[in-house]
Image 1 (cartoon, rainbow, N blue to C red):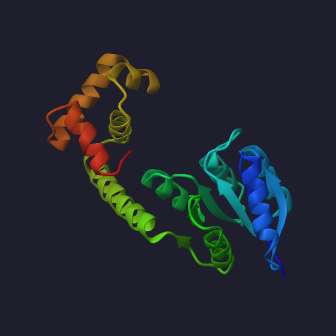
Image 2: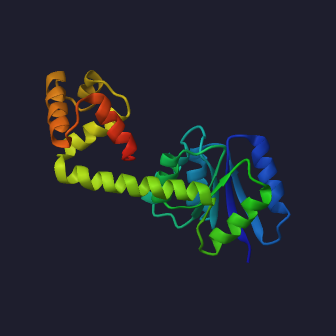
Length: 212
């Protein structure tokens, strides 16, 4: 029985290379190839393949948007992420959204074939160094989140994330439909509760705790 794949990448030559790679494997069948995220979602919903090989950056819907859509739709298709680069934050989010394999484009093609077979068999296949960094970030994020949940209100936690992203008071106020004065009051309360001296320390705190 063949492993049925959908390929999703916005570069035609990469799609060609992937299809050629898997054509050499008797137990793997490419059932669709997609050049944007929306078509990838449609192909998975229509064909219910065993695996989706998904590029992180695509037009229409990027890799994370595709993963969220598939999760919301209850898809049982397993996903292998194929990326030129992936940050620790992106990797953590991908794993949370059900990605079962991660392969960097710089790796040998044989690695991707191995990953596909491992994931099809029910394993998780992520390059060891990347997994270690991602797990470390995940643990720090969860620990930081638990502390914030004990000490801050949900609205204050949301503001901490925005400060960590580099947003200024006016931008925070606009995003949360508050007055700038109210945003400043929330920030003062956050500084007091977390025993921080100001915005710079809060930004460093949010980033070291893996909150952004």
